[in-house]
Length: 124
Image 1 (cartoon, rainbow, N blue to C red):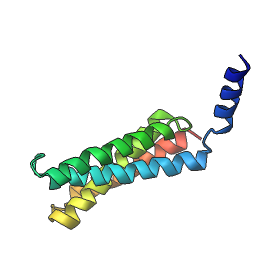
Image 2: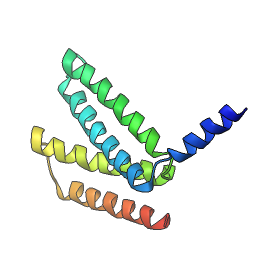
Image 3: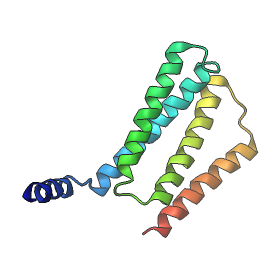
């Protein structure tokens, strides 16, 4: 019985700080962007190295995101992950594949950033 208590106490001591959880969230976003880029590069999963990288990067992304959720609120975390991931993907598309950058897309990015800021303010 005391072993269970010790294991529980050790787990509580190893809890992430908020700063560590935020770092994990942003690392998860980075790996999500890597995975999404590999998705495009895999040409519908037909180029094996990019296909493998896609799954590896998503596995890392979800592991980091799950760990960050031990401390951070789900709605805020998912909103930031999705928002920054979307903006990052748009930027990667513009820079690498010369996707269009229109006024509408710029407005959408501004709205995503504004929404993320508002969600963050709502959790404080």
